[in-house]
Length: 511
Image (cartoon, rainbow, N blue to C red; front, side, top):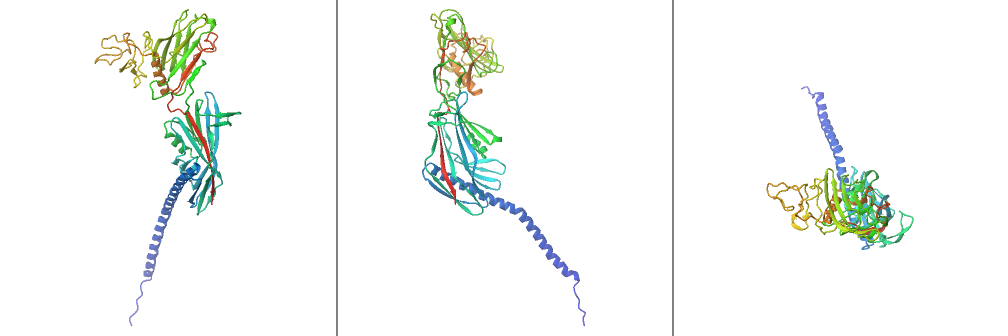
């Protein structure tokens, strides 16, 4: 009998352990893959769903526009919820304020209801006629623009708003239904209405009057609103992050003034930036006090900005109007001074009018934009040096010789035969004089137009005030008569003239 041999007891155990080890390795690998991959898969699914929601809201925007404008008063949209929530929020608003030179004269307040879909920390919303999205980082973007249209003259802003109630969530799909009565509320222009910014009713006319209009929007999507407004070069945009607000400021086309009482400040809030002559008219009718007769001096310093302290003072533009004392029709002269840091440019004085002298008092019409050259003025002052700061753009061609540039450069004259006052220098010549006595000088009105353009470009709107150092400011006992007046006409580019604002309410429900 042959003895039977059995395998060692460990052989079976080794096989089982091998299988178990393979299973454990597989389980661990599957767990790692599942643990790392599932969130990625879930994120991809969420992103795909949010893209679908964004597309659905963009489609909704088109439908709501048709409903609001009366093209199709009833609209509907199917939306998959996929675990998200849909609701109407009441946290946004719009304020439109109209200002005159000193304060808010009228305003319009509208509460905006926002239709918002939220899943996790991502949202998509329809608000004020536009579609917006916000991401976990807190940033927001515009998916579809609101109905805000501004061409530099006319602003049209139809605000789309909601009535009704919306509240939905879960995994299924819902149907949004929208209905419009096709009767928008016209907020501006309009007949006499009660203004929330004042205690009295007031009309809301076009064209606009005043100095500027501001539009402030409070919204969770204020960053995206600001980005939308900043796409236009016609508006000024500011953001108040802590309040979640964006503000748009628009300058108005001012009303022309003819023989308005001479009571500075005299404001030039906007100009035609594309024109070499940005103001069509700027003149002052000066009437002397009877007590002064014709013997008194005339000494006016109009300055902008109003904080300037006179010639040789802080930066800005000065218009200096003078007449020496004495009876008779003594001439009235105008000089222009510009200072920017260490650079100062002084032009004049140039005779622009005679102070007509009746038995008592005197009258002079001073055309500050005169293009007439009297032949006696000088374009520089020997006490000032640099005139190279502001001159040299395409508007600075010599008005008497359009093939030559006005050469506003330091005084004194070179005294060299190679320089004729306005044509380019010959090689090797040193130019130190803008003009010499043999050459005509630019009219003082031409010079003032130049500095008005330059002021607006570098310092903004002009606001001429009469310096307290002058004896001829209104209110001074030795000043001009109350019969003095001024005229100014405006030709503004990118100035708001017509405003159209409406609220288009849509009733929305979910089913």
